[in-house]
Amino acid sequence: MFIFPPSLTEQWASAYFQILIGVFIFALGIPAIEFQLVVEEDIRHIVVRRRTGLRGWKFIVLMLFLVSLSFVWFLHPGVPINKVSDSDVPPAASPTPVKVAEQNAGNIKDGGPVVASPQPSATPAPAPEPSLLMQLYMSEKVQSIVAASLVSLTFVLAVIYGLRLPTKYSRVNVIAHLRDKLIKSFNEDGHLDEDVIDDLSYLGEHGKPGDEKQLVLDAFKSVTYEVLDSPKYSGTELKEILLSFKEIVSGKDKPGNDTNYASASVLLTHVWKKISENESRLSSDNDARHAAQMLSALGIEAVKNMSQQTALTFVENAGQCDDKIVFEIGLAALRVKQFRVASGALSKLKWMAKSENQLQLTPSDMTLNLLGLLAHFIHYGDATKELAESFLSGKDISFSPSLEACINAAIYYHYFDSNFDTVNYLIKLLPDANGSFAERQPNGLS
Image (cartoon, rainbow, N blue to C red; front, top):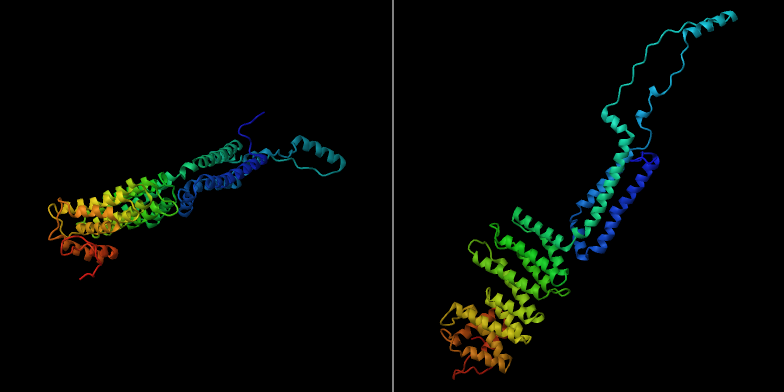
């Protein structure tokens, strides 16, 4: 007859232990194999380094340990205590008075000793009944139910953990976890955890172009917006995030695509503009300078390796920040024969200079960078020289106090910025006595 649950005999206890050993191997071995096969290499690196999300695995191991311990100390197979007691052992037969009299008669006849008649003995006190809890503990049925339940529960938990492993360690979840951890660290003490930044940067560098890199850029975007809007922000906390964009977007091993470049451009521009708007309450503008540095570096890389549209996006965004970045991107475009981008930078610089001085272009930084790029256009070739001269002779702009004064100011500006080739080309632009822009050998800065 089938009995459920089975009695906790030695055979069943041995079977339970074998099951536990199998589950233990499953809980440790199978997830480890699945972890290697399913989880991507860069995600594994972060999980192992930070022990991210291992609480479920630790719970399974703890559960297995407790179940095994319960078998050794609480569910040990054997005959329950309440099955064997003194009352279960039949008492030895006591002689009755009649039997004693008959025995004495025989002894007297044979000359033997006379046996005294037995005295009635007191009835022994019954053993105290065990408590209800002890009865339950000693119950074979309860022991069997507990044993079966523990083994079944442990197995179910191990299976659930194994099934959740691919989702738990997906790229989306790991990056979201690191993003939230980064925001939490800033909200707690006003500083961003550099180790977490390094982990996100690592995932960005090793992620595939497109969606995988974009996940990291979006995470950094969320953190950046949170920090910029916080009253704890002083103007320096975003340095590590901003500098990481170089390797994430334009790394040699896995460079990003046009979408990644454009996304980085928008975020860097936002940082620069936000800091400029709140410059009065911030103690430093270091992050603005780092954002400009990355915007220039990525813009030059976009000119060399990305589509013209992406490069023009950098020109447009740089025009909202710093004219020097526009100059650098335009110069890089001219050198690699990306003439559409170079012309776009020239137009952007002209627009920026005119926005600052509606009537006349004074020797502002924007005007000086415009003249520097025009000098390179004139030097490059006949077509670009014609375009540059049309800029200089156009009716919509004039220079104050004069074009020559602005060129001289541009010479000194680019000299102290170490743009010596630009200085040489600007010197050749100084007009001669007839007012023409004939090229000549530079005579120095005096």
